[in-house]
Amino acid sequence: MGRSKDPDKKSRPRKKHPILKAILLIPLVIIVALGGIVGYNIILNQNFTVTFYQIRSDKVSNNVRIVELADLHSKEYGKNNQKLINRIKDLKPDIIVYAGDMMMYRVDDYSVLFDLSDKLSEIAPIYACFGNHELDQYLFRDKNFKQDFISHNVNLLANEAVEVEVKDSVVQIIGLTDDYGHFDSPTNNSKKFMDSLEPTDNCRLCLTHYPELFFDKLLNRGIDVAFTGHIHGGLIRIPRIGGLYSPTEGFFPTLTAGVYEPGDGSRVVISRGLGDSSKIPRINNQPELVVVDICWY
Image (cartoon, rainbow, N blue to C red; front, top):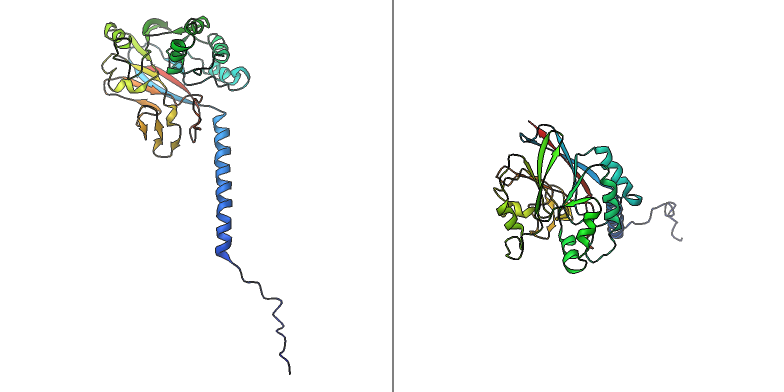
């Protein structure tokens, strides 16, 4: 007699290979995750957030609202930056400040910066300092840039000070030009200007592109609030750690974004910036418009 056929043979499931499936699935999961991260950051970086800080001072008699723009690098939010302009208008600032790098070095088309300045000057007076991009453009490529910048309704302060009446208070605004490495140079003027600056009882605001100056060069200079940028938030922001890299401090810098207290009573505001100047993308680091309310006690 022949062997009898197993009646359940056809119904038995084929042997599975879970390890092989897992190996094949892992790259797919990684690709999907990376795609999600890239997509999320593309959307994140095409929009800006607004960060509010409140700083108390007995040197103002009414609240003073200051909107800070930094590191725009000629980026546009909406056609002709209308989205950015509308948001600033809604914020009703008393003063608008540029903390440097509003354009790109070696790019001779300034229309984004100049058109934006013309529109913002209708909202509030604009005060600005040079960043490294503006200064290099002026020194090495375009000697007309400084005057052209000023002609578009921007009060550019290059190692200069002005006193401004805001509501019922007088505020002194100073603008510095030099970075940390050149601050003490005999051929530059930032240190000379600061050494010659007379004390004041008014609220002193400082515009400088470089936040690291306040932990050495600008200590005990009577500065109440400073507006800075340059660090781009550390480019890549790691949860619970902060920024990954700074052009001045290297990896895992201490100065990336927020309000810092150097220890002399001043407050240093560091903006994450609104644009980009390098090929390294911003990751988990949304562009930022900063609003500082200096409030009377």
